[in-house]
Length: 608
Image 1 (tube, rainbow, N blue to C red):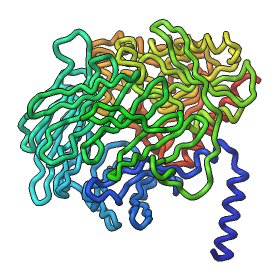
Image 2 (image 1 turned 30 degrees about the vertical axis):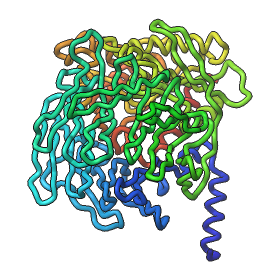
Image 3 (image 1 turned 180 degrees about the vertical axis):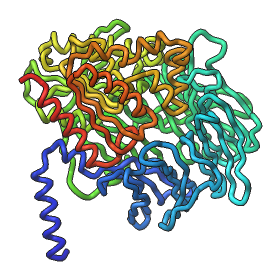
């Protein structure tokens, strides 16, 4: 190392030591679970923020060489490695608007090129690449066409093999390229997909639809074809026993083999590379674990992982399992069952945080699970942040999150609520919010708020309601519907005016809103009105902070401006921050700026 390099290294260490822990958590390099090429397993693709922007990286495990593959001002995270390891496909949109085209570049580096020339820009609806190195199945979604699926082959004209107005997506391509699995919602229920298997010419081979013939709505999902040439078995997820579970469906014979895994909570799975076993991911009460399942013996064997959350896992050809793990107290790491930490990016190390405590509160629809963090050694009542997750079909877990940790560092307790609508607690819990959208979630949040105050944890004079996306929507709805309950509202990329949001958002989200509310704004105006924050804006008494991406296709900017104009007309206390990206930012500096603005807003407006 030269003297100049040594000085630079010491300077960086000094800067890191002076940096507050909350900022270091955002800046510390982190990586995703590496994807690997099926027929060239030494070639991998992962996402990292090493340069300060989340981008795709190529990794040759044989040589150890890592190469940044994409470099765009607003970052890149959507990428696929071809099975032969020769190509990196990545999705090219404009400043986070999610509308664009697929491009590709050689794994070893080289110029980018259009992956499918002539295919018009769209929102992505799935992509699967064939093992022959010549075939791609591309799902597209547009306001004009709904969903279309296209088959592209080198040297041949790209052909459309599927089209429907309702939302759909490409699930998988069989190992020999002869079968294509599609998830679709032609029945009009965007929360519960049915399955169709097609030939490359678009002919239907088999269909499976659990939404028909019963009083309970059930969904299906594609988990993957068996990785063996000529094998017609498709691993799928189903909800027939009130939760997500895997089964094997032979699309040629129609035979279904239910694995009947006696595990509480949701269960997913994927094939081991040789098709001899399944890697099972089990999620229960905000934590997860791994198993190996042998279909021949029906034996389920635990794969040891630390307590916390496995955010992704994959079985390697040598039989090892790599997984992305974290807990609320410990930052994420890519680990292997045979070799410890797989990827350890250089640079500053992320500080840990405090562990979560589990709380169960009786609510109007059943027991509500909440996760609580508070400064070490602190006793209540504390200023408390209710950090509400997005989705709504998602859930908070015992996993590392820099945002909540920043609030804890500043002396706040943080409460995260897995309200009705959250995943991981059974089908009935997830599906419960239909038609009373937003109102049901707020009932659960109110129950947990009452517990937090009554238990002595939370100071009722210093309660912040915050969240991003659906969490931002619930924040604005909450400060209007429950004005006496919240001291401040801090909403990131929210739905603020539900009717305008519906008309401006991407087509797939229109389908979801029709499912949640039972129709369009013209068909069920009373439901949209009851669930829209704009309806209650004149009741808002708490100071409100809103951040919004000007290119956001999910929570578009116009509907937020409508809400802000109503606040301005009342001279209500509010601040708005607009940034040049989409539904969130992939630039670390931008993320830090937004958290700093939120912390500053709370410092200025929360009673002492």
